[in-house]
Amino acid sequence: MALRTPVAPLHLFDTDSLIGEEDRAIRDAVRHFVEQKIKPEVSQWYEAGSLPVRELAQELGGLGVLGMHLEGYGCAGTSATAYGLACMELEAGDSGIRSLVSVQGSLAMFAIWKHGSEEQKQEWLPRMAAGEAIGCFGLTEPDFGSNPAGMRTRARRDGDDWVLTGNKMWITNGSVADVAIVWAQTEEGIRGFVVPTGTPGFSAPEIKKKLSLRASVTSELVLDEVRLPASAILPGAAGLSGPLSCLNEARYGIIFGSLGAARDSLETAITYSRERDIFDRPLASFQLTQAKLADMALELGKGMLLALHLGRLKDEGRLQPNQVSLGKLNNVREAIAIARECRTILGAAGITLEYPVLRHANNLESVLTYEGTSEVHQLVIGQALTGEAAFR
Picture 1 (tube, rainbow, N blue to C red):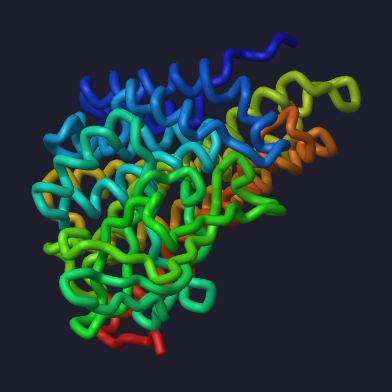
Picture 2 (cartoon, rainbow, N blue to C red):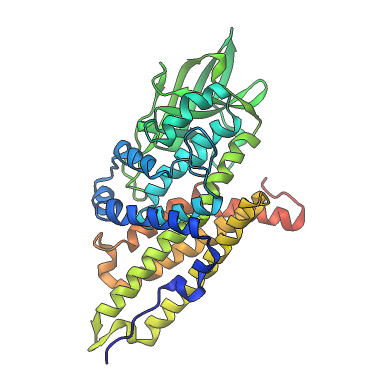
């Protein structure tokens, strides 16, 4: 018996009816870019452990997605929902591509846009929006990830200058960046600095031998008596609230982005199950297979409804950090479960780079712990529910 035409997982939830026409058009343009430019190449990039960042940055800048939700300075000024949908399509290609865009727009560019001087904004944002300059964000250190307040990187005054010393770790885009936003302890508390990467004493050795986010440049930042002028400090950021405001922007993109990896995995598994015969029947015709697919579609759809609701709150200026934690915790946790389950449907074929599902699962292992581990987001939510902080 011929199989009927299947329904796409998110069509079951009619989520397109919740998205405005302009936002759908932006999403579709990014989806087309990913289908044409990313998916045909990404398995080779992943296997080689490399990414043509500068070439891609200029193409992504031309597409208008770098800092797309920011206003002015060459940025597109889209809605937050459109930005989230773009992240979803980019991560359907690969988490490394979405990470490139997130770090550029939601961390490095956002830090300058929100906390920088007018001079800093004029100098960097137009070039970064166009993909002509690449940024990175230096907060995490070798011994301080979930506890950034304990960072050891120091900035001391020397006359009118600042001198930075320390190390940052797991920095996306670090080795190819033109500018780094570096957070350091000062006598006044934690402050942010705009550091051109050509400054003497700055180096960014690339981290190799990764099993996750292989189609992404990940680096250490080494600051050895890096001397900066007084104008390098971000005037609008004082204390830990500065970097945390940037992290909330990046976490928001992950709420949508992780669903892109899940959707691509599920659509791949559905297609495979319809084409793969076992015991003289399509794999899709077995009850156990359909139960897996149904459960995964349900979690994907619930995650999408949550993401769209949070996007609407953000567009209205009402999104709270603990709500971002809800989205990041749920959607990444469900996305990685979906990718792993999809691998079981593909059997041995699922472990190869011919299909994207294990690549997505491996990437999501990193997404699960960066921009706040699942445990940290559980504690953020727990604090909201109880009024008690349990971080120490």
